[in-house]
Length: 451
Image (tube, rainbow, N blue to C red; front, side, top):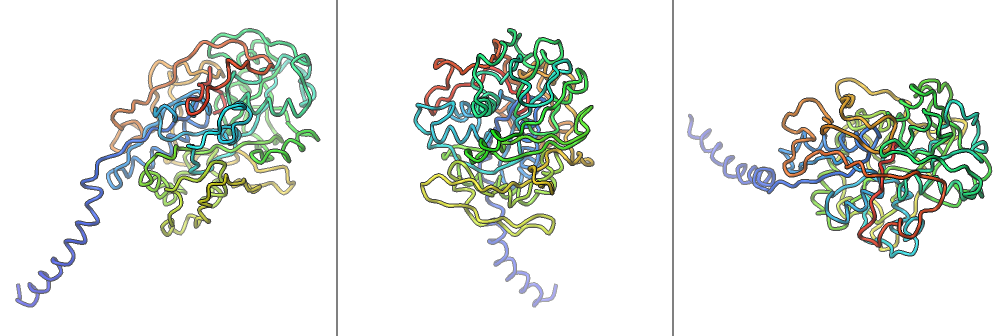
């Protein structure tokens, strides 16, 4: 080698090697971190949404050191309890449940506001879905009066949202027939066996459990609309108009008007900022792939995912976001840092039909090899039910490889226990059934089919 070339190489190595070591050191020598996401029922939308987040994080865990696993739970209120106990570090929950928790209202009335909850991202819309049996002769919301109606399990997100609607309609317990006592895990089976006329489910669409009901039992989706619904939406900032897209389910040939909450990704204030930044950056950089992993995610934009929050924004979300690839959107402002709770913007991240009926849900199919596979037979809920009944932990992705959402040690992917449940008649839960004072929120007694 010529002397001048050797000298130049030596100078380059003296300057480049320290820089290279500084860049590589965090990923090579930092202790790995593990997070678990509390989701929902195996045949709902929360579970594959959590799986999509973990999949993208784990595919790059060698670079950033953060490993992710998914925990099936019974839904929003169960996830609040799991966060408080440290059983999960991230949680998906309905925006109205989150609102009530941070304000001490609704199901948490009389309790101190939970000031430790922090918003990360707003995800897909979840419509309050009214499902009627094939033999019920129900065609409008008004038709359910006097019928056997399931409003959701006690202490569930389903019940919190459906009760808000029924209160707005001015309906009382005496206006309805009492539904029969049900066996654990079969909350909605009455729509098929003739013992239930209608049921409310908060769900992202398309939804596996609702697909089973409409296909196997010819159950039908009923619009939720009218003057009282309009008043309800004006009074509560966490509700938006929504329209379930046409042809998502057997026999459903037209769109269905209703209203929706938003699925929120939430953590506690104590979650390290570095872990939140890692999650934020990975989802931001790979947003296009993320939106292809489930039909309910297809309309998401990064701007919409950051458009306001119900709880205070986690500090890890406040830093400047890196420059995005050409196929993703630039992030909007991160949000306020003051102690005041933020207000929700009226805008939605989903596409809105020209008739102004609200954003469409579930209008795009899964695409290509990036999609999550169907759940194996042993990992499905008992027919259209709210509680998981599994024989084995389901696989979220392709056969395990490095980066799989199921590989992080110490956090097994396990289904929830199927607790005993009673009938869910149209009546307010007793004080004993209400969630305990924060931070120890009560766990839902059965998994909402929609989440």
